[in-house]
Length: 214
Image 1 (cartoon, one colour):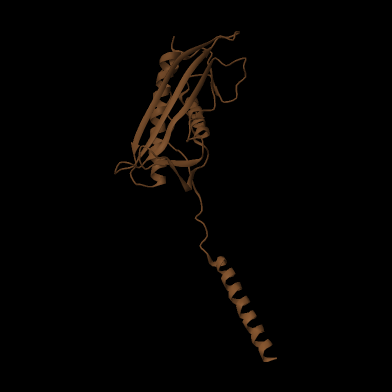
Image 2: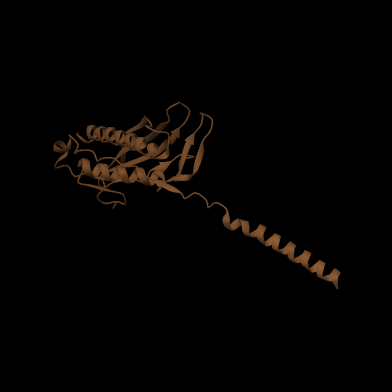
């Protein structure tokens, strides 16, 4: 009888230890919440060429930008050196760069007021020009002492001939901007990348103005 009681106590003690050990997971640290970032900058002023394009029927279609690997993701990509590309686990863009930069281009072109309409989903009947592009670089460069935001965007403008399927490529240009971060953190990256995109947008709009005035 006594031997059976001892065996029972040992079994209960073992079960208690197992339950305590199993319950330790309840007190483990919770994973860090994901922080989301976006680009933000003041819209450009109306383009200087607007008075020259007034009266010309212009409808610009901005196609959704493509993104080369590894930038077709909402994860923030960083480069510890020229041979590596990594991504933050808990810091991400609110949307993939292809969507974010497309929306900014549409907004900036509307504000520049160089055409009658800027659309992202066009009607084939009235579009006169099409903008296409590819994100070549969109990352945080951690190799120097001061981190950098690196943006490289190839953009093209095509003229569509009314009443036909003829298309004329007016120009293709690669815009590259590098901005030093004021602090080495993802929020500073978003600020620096915003400044880089603002410069790209302004340069592209100036180039469009030069081609639309004919």
